[in-house]
Structures are given as C-alpha cells and as structure tokens.
Length: 567
Image 1: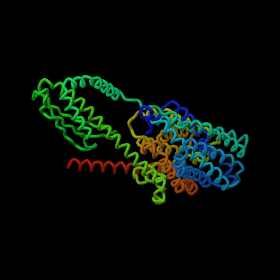
Image 2: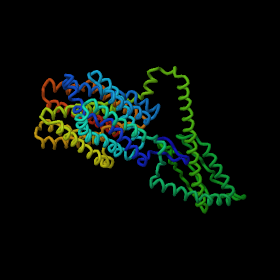
Image 3: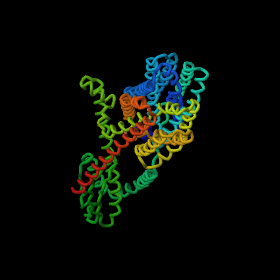
C-alpha cells in the first residue's frame, strides 16, 4: 500500500485486528457457497439416473460449473478494481443462492446447466476471487495463516454437508433439499458484509530496531549543532568561508553528478595570515538506493589548533549536503508524479489517441501474459485443478461401485474433510515460518497427494479405504493452502486481481478441454481405478512442467554467472 498517514509514515496491512473478522466472513462465504460441491454425486445422483444420464452427464455438469466459475475471472479483476471486493462478493453471494434455488424444479440437463452450472458458477467465481483479494489486502506476514483458516470454512462444510444432504434427501427429496440449500447459501451475504474496506483498518508501519537507533543517533548529532554555530561565531572569517562552501553545495548538479569544492587554504583573520588551518572538502554522491537515500563521502584534512573546528564544520557540511540531496530527490519525485498525472489526464481526456486493443490490455492487465514463469504457473495449477475436480466428482461413484451405501459414502467424505481441516489448521503457521517458496511446498504436497490417491484406487476393504482416504484428505489440504498463494507469491498486490482472474480463466480453459476426460475414461474402460490413476498422471504433468522450468532457470543463471566471472 502506497498510502501514508499525516506524519508521513507508511500505512501497511493490519495483519490482524479486523482482518481476523474478515477471515470469519470468508469462512462463512465458503461454507455457504462451496461446501456442496463434493456432495454433488449424492445430491444429483438419483436425479441424473432418472434422466438416463450416465457418469459423462455428471461430468459435463461439473465441468460446466467450474468452467463458469473460472471464466468469470475475465470480469472479476476489472470489477474489483472499478467497485470493490466487498461489492463483488455481495453480488456473487446473491447469484450463488439464486442459482441453487432456481434449480429445484429441474427436470432436464439444460435446466441444471443454466441455473446450477452457469448462474451458480458466476456467483461462486465472484465470491472466490473477491474474498481471496480481500484477505491479501488485510494480511502480508500472516497471509498463509489467514488463507488457511478461511479455507477451513470450506472444509467444515465438506465435513457436514454429506451428512446434511443425506438427511435432506430422505426428508424432503431432491426439490425440497435444493430450496433449503439455497437458503443456506444466502448466509454468504452476512460474510460478505464483514469484508470492510482495508483502508478503514490500515496501521502505520512499525520501525525496526536498527531504524530506531539511527533516528536516535540523528537526534544526538543535532544536539551538537549549537556548538558548531558558536565556534563559527567566534571565527567570523571562517564562518564566511563555511557559509560560502554550503552555498556552493546547494548549487551543485542534481543527483548522479560529481562535484568538487575547494575551500581556500589561506584565510585572513584580523590582518593576520593564518596558515595553520587548511582544509579541502571533496563531496560526491557515490551511490543512491531505490528508497532515495544516498551515501556521501567527505574527506577533510585539518592542521593546527583549529583541527577540531574543521571537523565540526565538516559535520555541518555533511548534514547540509544530505539535506540538499534529499530536497533534489523530493523535487524530482514531485516532478515525475506531476508528469505522470499529466499523462494520465491526457489519456483520460483523449482516449482515441490510444488503440482500442491497448486500452483493453491495460484495463485487464493482460501484459501479465508476457511473463513465461507466470504462464507456466498457470499451466501447472490448471492441470492440477482438473485432476482435483475429477477426483472429487468420481469418488462417490467409485464408493457406490464397491457396494457401499449412501451413508457409508457420506461418512467417508466427512472423514476426508476432517483430515483436510486438520491440514489447513496445522500447516499454515508452519508454512509461514519456513523459508521455502509456496510453490515448492505445493509441489511437495502434490507428490504425496497423487501417490495416496493411486493407492486409494486399489483398495476395496473398509479399513484400508478409510486409512487411505484420510491420508489423501490431509495431503489435499496441504496442497490447497498453497494453491492460490502460488499466484500471490509471484505477483504484486496491484496486479493480484488480474493475475488471479487470468488464473481462473486458465482453469476454465483446461476444464473445458480436459474436464470430461475422466468420465469418458470411466465409461469407455468401465474401470474407476484407471480413471483415478489418470488424475494422478495429470498431477505429475504439472510437476514435470515446473521441474523443466527450474532446470532451464538454473542453467540460464549459471551461464550468466560464468559470463560475469569471465568479464
């Protein structure tokens, strides 16, 4: 955040305070809108069988839902930037609830696709993006913990919803269950209201210990100022010479130039030639960092009894020099800001001077697509998401094929959610403290997730299934806590809405292309284990793509280092 308070201190994310209330709000939104997804097979299974639609039909509905969720990313970034994450979350909450409620009289695939997949998908897409952006504004150092805890709402819903759906279907059938679930989804409005603008809760940045020490040292130096002034008053002619030198420094070239000022070696004081005091002042700006600070080297040669006086004058000269440089920096910054404002105002005043496609690129931040590493991240996350989506959809059918009842299936899914919650509650604080990139942590967890799911596919006994599905649920939570953070880790906060929106679009494209593949493999081969193994293969394709990028990056860095050493 570039804002500052009245005292000039930088305003930063609260990293707590109302931020934790915002986390509760996001938990409510996730619990109300997303917890039903893993129970799709339970809720729609009998209805789809009555329609004569096989596994492929269920796969099409789920794929259409997720494609809509992700293609909504085209609009989410600009909408959040134009309005706010809070308003977008409110709109998404309404659409999600209305989508479920209007699905209750459905008797055809077209109806379900129109209301549940498209309308509900838009609502979930809007809430998903806006809540993620909101938490990234509220947290910086504790971002992992906040994201992980907010996802607990989804996991809690996944744990409770299978049992709730089972009971609702027994009491109120398919139509009545959807109306009740639509009412539950309306609670997302309450959670969205808690996402207050972060500007209401920002706090001044706390100074580090070494910065406080520097300020104290500067205060001590300023206490010596009267001593210099009194000494200069006792030596009038010397005072004139020093003031002249200070004036010369003020007139020196701007930042980046070099100058040398020579103070006269002989000073006449009251008719007596004084050769005892001689000094040479050479000041230059040797380096300036990105914060606008500079390092000034001043060399002083003093002779005779007035050496101490020369040293004190040099302190004054250094302070004066630093002040002059700081003034130049501020002037340059103000000038550049005015020029930028003029450019912005010129663009807004005469938009016809800029090609339409450039305005679209600027408005939607499509220049992110020039970043090859970002594109590879999108590829890996998207193909992983397709595998996750297919696994979530296929598990209820897989358990039913093994001969387990709906109650057993609901219990299996609930235990998966319990281990998922455990991972999301325990791992985020650890991930925040270890100095490992989120992307690396995600890749490590993905390896174990894929292996555990392949082991699960070969099990038939109740105990073995329970153990492997719980382990799989834990690694699922471990991957998902770092899933979205892989994007925010790579992009700046200003680019995050657009980056996350493009990430959702990429997922939508992959779902449209590869989403039905899992159902087709199952229907053609007649094997659920083969279908689950194909999803593990997708996960490992993600890891292979990232591994290739890592090798190319390391090789390129080594080559550049060798060229630098040779030169």
